[in-house]
Image (cartoon, rainbow, N blue to C red; front, side, top):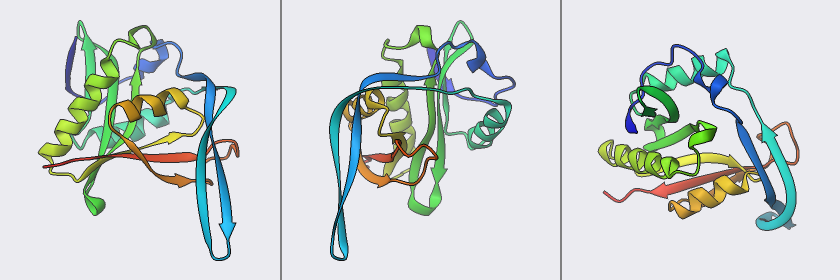
Length: 179
């Protein structure tokens, strides 16, 4: 297995990558408490089954390719076949590297590939002299949240209106880079 800079996607490899989504028996619920002119958000774990499945279409691939052109994304290759990626957007306005998409072929999951990709992303962020690596994840994607927390990310923001599905809240997570 080899991790290297990701080049333009000429086709959609995710068609053959198996289950694209997540399944969990636990989620984070988000609640808001208003007190006069201030408010507070709270997150708590809740036992609840949740499944989300998505397809990556041609428009998605085109959008990802625009980000890949920056040269800050990584692919994981097994015998020259792409089996995973971390697609990252350098954001000059806040000096961060944003993980736009991280995805691994289903049969290669749970083999520390995600952990290795995060290490490459963090190394690239240091090289770019970014102050942090950021990402966004749904409150319902408990396995991903746990993975990112183990990798050193902290929840740093919430957007309760980002998604059409009212049961989903965007959680923003970041990893502080020390140069």
